[in-house]
Length: 285
Image (cartoon, rainbow, N blue to C red; front, side, top):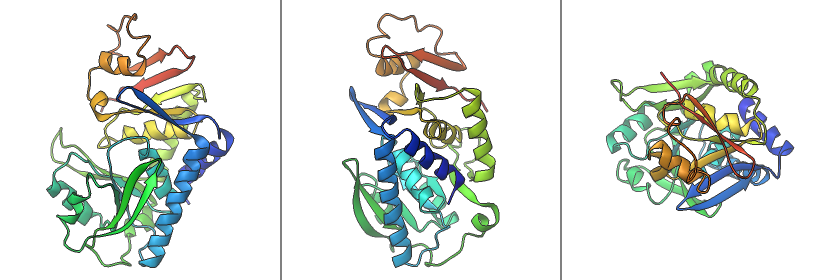
C-alpha cells in the first residue's frame, strides 16, 4: 500500500462529512464528501484487484487514466493507488500516436476510460478488449485491457524504485518525454507544502495545472491529505483567462472586485462569500 494513499484514507476518516471535491460545470456546483470519496475509491480498488487476479495481471504495472478532468478524476487516482498500482495520466487531447507510444513504452495493460474516449483504444490496439462497465458518481466508465503485452510481465522499475505515477510532458519546451516519479520523491514535497500553508478544512485548492505538468499531483494531494477541498472546473473554464475563471469560482463576488492584480500573482488567495478561501498556485519551471 502506498503511504500517500494511506494518508488520504486517514483524512477521509477524520473529515468524513467535509467536502473533498467541488466540481463546477455549466454554472452548477457538485460536491463529494470525504466519506463518499473514500467509499468510491475503495469500490474501484476492489474492482481493479479482481481484474488483476482474474487476468493474472501483475499488481505493480501502471494503470492508465484516459478521461476528462472532472469530479471523478481524483477518485480514480486514489482507487488505483489503493489497489497497489502506480498510475499514468493520459492526455485526452493528445494524438493517437502519442497515446500508443506511451502505452507501449510503459507496458500498460489496464486502462480506465469512458465511451467518449474508448475508440482511441479500440482503433489503436487490435488485441484490446473492454473488461468492465462501471459507474462513479453517475459517470459511466469503462475498464479496458490494451492487449499489447502478455499478462504477467513485471515492472522492474516499480520493484526497484517504488514508482507512484508517470506522465508525458506536453513538449512545449522540446521533445515530449516520459517522466516516472517515485513516492519517495513526491511525498516530502506534499507534506512540506501542506505544513507551510497550514491547510485545513477551511481551504479550497484550485486544481488548475494540466495533467502533463507534475504540479497537478501536488495540487491534488495537498487538498486530499489535509481535509481541504479540491476545486475542479470544466475544461472550458480551465482554459479561460484568470478574470473569467474567477467569475466562475465567485459569480457574486467577482462582479464588484478589482481583478487587475490577479493575473500576474504567484500565489493568489481569494476569499469567497461563504467564508472559505481558494488557493491558486501558479507554478514556474
